[in-house]
Image (tube, rainbow, N blue to C red):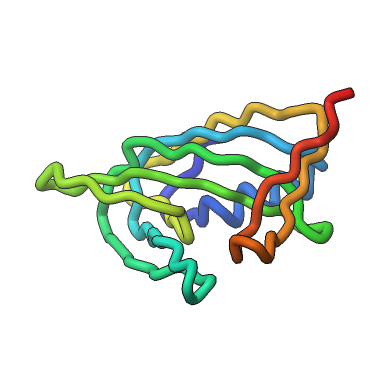
Length: 132
């Protein structure tokens, strides 16, 4: 998938999952970010502490596409650097393509994977199917 300036990366991935009925997938990506929002998970609050960055290059994005309660559930982490070559990263909460493009490689898997909230840790986890 090649996205262009102004595209919302997570929204486009969700739309693709619905349109193509993707059971699950692994993703990787790189490119220009007009805005990227990273989050660091606070287990005490069971929520992310967000931080926004503008005009960055995403040097690496990795993640999984799965489902939660019938809706797409994207879990992705990324690293981004600015003009000063200083890098930041974390859980990807938002990503809008900046000037240029953003490339995402999607490897589709044949099994439908689900995410479920695990009360014992206070976060969503990926459930793997029984491989028997």
